[in-house]
Image (cartoon, rainbow, N blue to C red; front, side):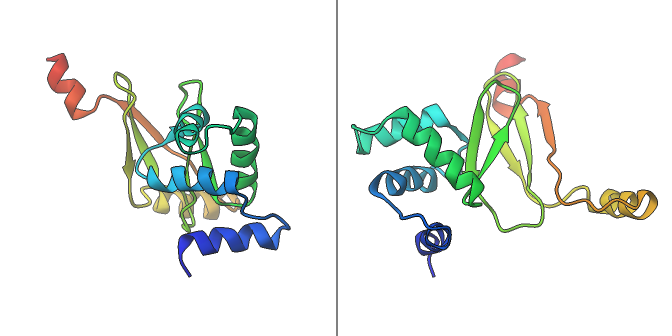
Length: 146
């Protein structure tokens, strides 16, 4: 089953259809999976394909996609929510955020697995998820800065 079929099933299971608007929004997110687009950026890209769509429709659809586990909402402390396709992982991956250009680089691998195990054991606390953001300067900005 391809990704679109999986997402279509998630919608169907909750009583929703993959409407044209939802499909175009999903297509834009999938086509830009290496980026962390804000709702406004998604809206701008969707309007190129479907000019009559409204910003409110994009907001509602992103909220629905988040509730259904299709997208994951990220906050990089820049005043905008950003979205990426949900990964079937126990934990979200980590992000490196450039303070100069705003670039977001994904860090694969769970860097905190041992720490989580220690916390769960010593504090009798079940950890479900965590979110780690590293702030600094990417190599391109560091080259231009020096």
